[in-house]
Amino acid sequence: MTPTSDLDRVAMIVLRYMRRPLFVLLFVYSVGIMGMALMPGRVVEGETTHMNLFHAFYFFTYTATTTGFGELPNGFSEEQRLWTIFCLYTGVIAWFYAIGSLIKLVQNPHFIQAMDGFRFARKVKGNAEPFVILCGFGDAGSLLARGLSDHRMRAVILDADPERIKALGVRDYTVPMPGLHADASAPKHLLAAGVEHPACRALVALTNDDDVNLKIAVMARHLNPRLRVICRSTSARHEANLRSLDNVTVVDPFEIFAQLVSRAIARSELHNLNAWFVGTRGVELGVPVRVPRGNWILCGYGRMGRWIHRHLQDHGLDVRIIDPEVDESQVDEGTLIVREHADHAALTTAAIEDVAGVIAATNRDADNLSTLLSVTELNPQAFRIVRQNSHENQVAFDAARADLVLQHSLTTARRILKLLISPLVQELIDWLAERDPAETQALVARLKAAVGDQPPHLWSIRLVPGDAPAVTDHLMAGEHLALGALCVDPGAFPARLPCEALAVHREGASIMLPDAELALGAGDEVLFCGTPRSESMLRATLHNPYTLRYVVTGVDAPRGYLFAWLDARRRRRGAPS
Image 1 (cartoon, rainbow, N blue to C red):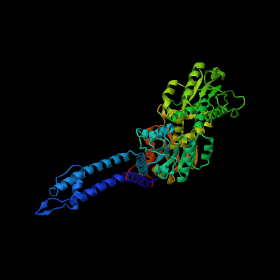
Image 2 (image 1 turned 45 degrees about the horizontal axis):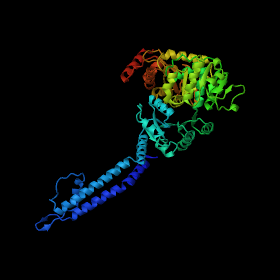
Image 3 (image 1 turned 90 degrees about the vertical axis):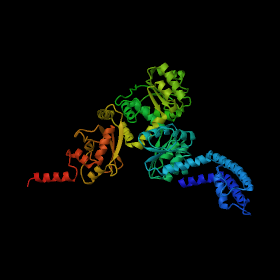
C-alpha cells in the first residue's frame, strides 16, 4: 500500500464520521449569518439599518470562540441582540456535537489503524538506510530485532498482535524500528513495509504459523523476485515448498537445536567456538563444555526429538526415548522406548542410573523443568541438556542450573542474525564441522592470541570502490596485494593488528581460513575477527592510499605536492648518471 492510498483511506474515514457534524455547523452558521443580515438594526436618520453579509460573517467568526469585541460595526438593535443570543446558544450546541464527534473519530479503531498505516508507510518510504522487513515479533522476532539493533541494522516490523507492536514502542533500540499492527501475509502491508524499497536487504518470516510464513514468502517472491527471503519452518511439507522457491533460505529451528546438541556432545570445541562467536553469556573461548560419552535419554520425540535422535545416532551414541506418543515405526529396532511422561518412574524404567546424560526436549517448559528435578534426584552425575521454549521463563531456567540450556527462539534468532549480518560465519562453522577437530583447536589458539579475553568483534569488508577505494585503485593499477598486508598495523610496522581473517568470499565461492599470502582481488569479501580498534585501523588502510602503500612496502611515501616533488628531485640526484 502506497502512502497516497493510506492518506485516501484516512480522508474517507474522516469524511464519513465528520460529515454530519460539518453539515450541522454549516447549517447553523448559514442560518445565523443570513438571519443577522436580515434582522433590522437601529434607526439612523429615520432609516432602519441592516448588517451586510461580510459584517455578519465577521461577527460570527470572532464570536465562535464565545468571546467578542463588541457590537460591530454599529450598536445592535433589540432584534439583533435577540438573534445573537439565539445563534450563540445554537452554535455552542453545534460545536459540542462536532467536538464529540471528533473525539469519537480519533478513538475509532479503523481511523487509528489507517493513521498508523499512513505514518508507517511514510517512515519506510523516507528511509534511505539499509533495512530488513521482520514479519513476526514474538520471542524469536524480538531477539532478532535486538541483535540487529546491536549491529546498527534497521528493521521494519509487522505483527498481527497489537500488544506486541505497542511493546515495540518502549524498546531502547539504537536505530529506528517502525512497527505496524497488520497481517504480514497481505501484499498491501508488505508493500507498505518496503518490500519493493531499494534499501530493503531481506525479508524474514518469523510468525508462529507455518502457513502464514509460507504465504509471506510466496507473496514476497512475486512482489520482488530479487529480494532475499529467510523463512522459519517447522513443517516438513512447508519446508519442501519453501526450498523449491528461488532466493528463499529456510531455517528449521528443530534442526538447528539438534545440531547444537550433537555438537555440544560430539564436537565440544566447535560448539564452544560457535557459542563464542554469537556472544553466548558465560562462554569463554577455548574452555568448552565437557560432555561425557555414553548412553543418553531423550525426553520428547516430536520433530525436534527425531532430529536430535538422528544426529546422536550419526555420532554412534545409544539413545533411549521417553515419550507417551512416540511412533515406533519412526524408531530403529532395538531402541528402548518408554511410553510415559518423563517422571521418576519413566526415568527409572529407562535405566537413568547408567546414562551419561539426559536431554529434556519437549515443547512444554514445565515438563522440561520437572524432568530436570527428577534427573537431579535420581542421577546427580548425569549431564543435563534442556530445551527452553519461552523467553519469559528465563529466570526459572537460570535457577534450574542445567549444564546446557538451549533456548528455542534464541538459537533461531542467532542463526538468522548470522545469515543477515555475516553469513560467512555460519559457512565457517559448517566447514569446520567436516574437518578434523585439530583445525578448530588451531583456530581457537590463533583467536585467543589475537583477541585474548575480549569478546569477539566480527566484521566484513568488501573490496569495492565505495568501501575500499584505496585498495580497489591499487588492484586496478595491476598491483599485487596479499591478505596479510591488510592485517599489518600501520602504527607499529611490521607488527600485525589483533585480528584474524576467517574467510574470503570470491565469485560465489568461499575460501576458509585463508593464508596470509593469498592474493586479493577486486570484489572480494573478507570476514575478520578481532578487536574494535583493529577494525578502525584496517578500514583506515582501505581508504588511505598512503597508509596502504606503507603497509605493503614499508616505505612512508611523502604526502602533498611539494614534498612529493622534493622527494622525486632527491631521487633523481641520487640516481647514477
